[in-house]
Amino acid sequence: LAAAAAAATPAVTVPPLPIPPPFVLAIGTEVLALWGDNFYYPGKLEKQVKSNAWKIRFADGCVGKSVPASDIVSPDVVDVGMAIKVLDKDAVYEAATVTALLSEGRLRVRRGDEEGETEDVVSRNDICVDPDTIHEAVAARAALTAPTTNATAAESPVTPMRAGVTPTTPSTATSSRTNGSTKDRGAAAAAVARREPDSDVFLGWQFAVSSHASNNEQREAVLTLIRRGRGMVVEEFTPDMLAAGQTVLLADDARRTKKYLSCLALGVPCVRFEWADACTRAGEIVDYRPFLLPAGRVSGDIEMPQALGGPLRVFAGKVFLVLGNPEFCKFWDYVLRAAGAEVLNKVTHVRGDGDVQCDFVLFSEEMHHSDHDAVSRRGQVVTHSWVVDCIITQSIVALA
View 1 (spheres, rainbow, N blue to C red):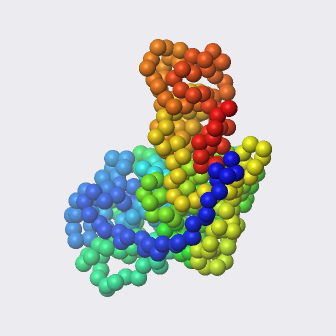
View 2 (tube, one colour; view 1 turned 30 degrees about the vertical axis):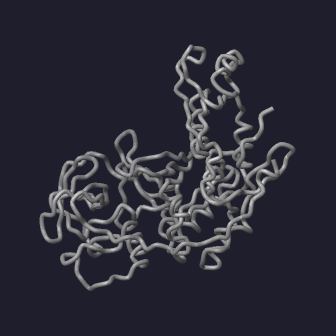
View 3 (cartoon, rainbow, N blue to C red; view 1 turned 90 degrees about the vertical axis):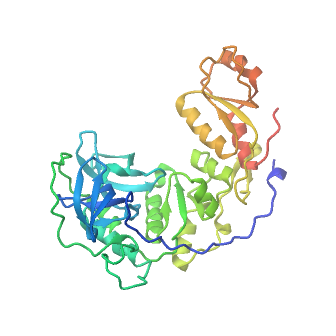
């Protein structure tokens, strides 16, 4: 197994850090816009009614007939650590803090009080943000791009994150919005959200973060460093992110978690938390190789190094049948696909005479031994430990 993982670590190249694109007002553009209750809500531009005003259809169906351009911002101002409001099951907005930006317009948020906190995934369409938080986020982002002309909002709607100047009073649009009143933000969340950034050292980089529950304080400190350095925290890496090559998993240790195993399979560097601190102190991206975590341990407790160089797809061309409870199937479906496999897990009758054929069958430990015998003819039965060993060594390990 040790020989299978021996490979030279490629030289680290750091692509130029991109500048956020300008925010352009156009029909169909998704925005956050100020409503009559003095909060910003998500919506889409439907029609330009004046040189500096737009008709907006908000996500909840309400319509702003003439919203000034100065009251419209890009939804991209919403970032990790920001204090927002989230629509709850009773159609009332409650305080929350953004903990991760996910794909398809979703956010992971933390909400709760002294009696307990919970984390949920919500749609960006179900949030609102107070003006002070929006203004500070816009000002911080605007510092990244210097304006190229002295054009006003009426002459050119192109700005880094906002169309126009900071409003001093809310819009006068009225309607019977019935979502209920908002609640006060938590002091701690507001303090984190409004802390001034130190630099743009992580601008253009995407991070996944993994840690044991006992290391929550260290995790929060790392998330703060990323946010202050303009990095983005995501729950999972999309193909576009991987193609850009500026992706890193920050972790406190090598773990056999879905996030860690999938990053190993995708060739994403898994790096110790200390790397983020080193970059922050240096004011630039430093070589991550001294901070690399091991890929993991295999038979005989042999510690294996990471094999880097892009998506490695150890199971490319292989078909897996995954059987078990929904949580087991979801976990291994994600990891196996990251490793290049095709995954089947929609078998209604395990013991049926169906013609489902595959290379490997992966069982959860709770599956009955008789089911094990029934599907063994469809493919080689393997354990999840064998799958992990293959990902760690980036090779198909011989079966006993």
